[in-house]
Image (cartoon, rainbow, N blue to C red):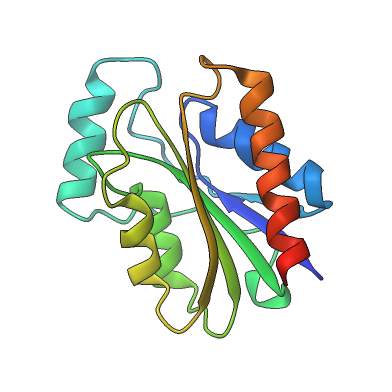
Length: 162
């Protein structure tokens, strides 16, 4: 099954999980990168600027993709949680790439509560089959090894169930 992991990451937590998922199932990986990153990692201002972007539903321009998600059978899509939601780069991706009939697994990383992040992502992906959802709390700070194994195990279980 041709598999692609798609993610955005500001501080590396979601990237870490995305890489572990890709390693676990031999997937290609696509990092969503804004042309201009306006939110600074590891700063207090990230909460203000990132939250503002989420609340105003900003859609930053993204760099060109190295892979076409339409060419894949299974997609793993991941995001950090900003203001209890998915990040603006994911919003841009959802508006630019019209996915239908795909099998999709969703994941997020968060410092606190994920709230409805995964459900909001699922709503953006109507017309697809959501085959799994999982969240990770600060994987780079909390039990990195355990989070890595959990991500790989989850991805393998998804593939095995299809």
